[in-house]
Amino acid sequence: MPESKRRKSKQPAFTPPPSPVPTSVKIGNPRWLAPLMVTMFLLGLLWIVVFYLAGNQVPVMKDFNNLVNVLIGFGFIGVGFVLATRWR
Image (cartoon, rainbow, N blue to C red; front, side, top):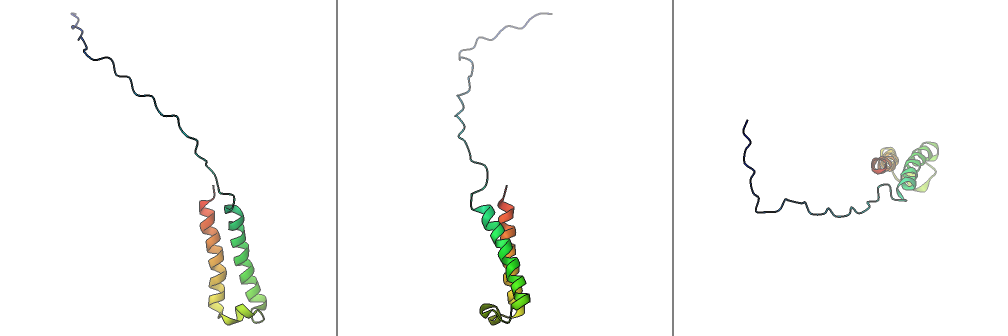
């Protein structure tokens, strides 16, 4: 079988440019994330427990009605869950 002619190249062979040196990326959590997350969980739980045990005797809690106090407690817990989604 006959061989085909080789093409003469006028340009040198392509060499890709050197890739830049990758910079180090810090993967992880900020130092404040885990303590704040746990604090929010505990603060929400503490708010609900204190409301049910002594809600009529605590000055700030007796100003709100029952639904608002429960929503405040679950709001703190919800913020804790939002922070937990950022935790790696």
